[in-house]
Image (cartoon, rainbow, N blue to C red; front, side, top):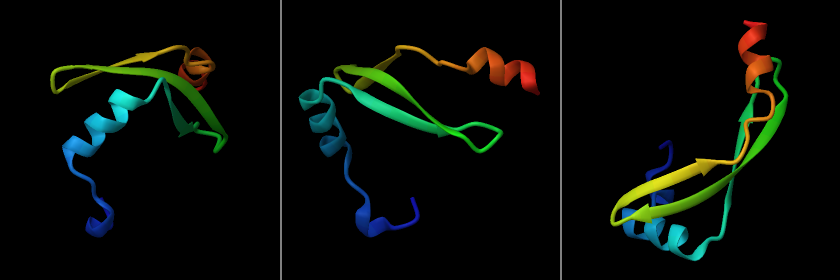
Length: 65
């Protein structure tokens, strides 16, 4: 992390997971285009579990290499 003064502890992260219904992961593809993937986040004790709903262009990105 670039700025330690913005860093949050693990308990904060667990609280966010416990109170959120979903999340969004935003990425940049090799062409520089931004795309977002919806996430379902849960945890088993201190072990987070994530489910990606769909990677819309993953096969396209893989074949473009």
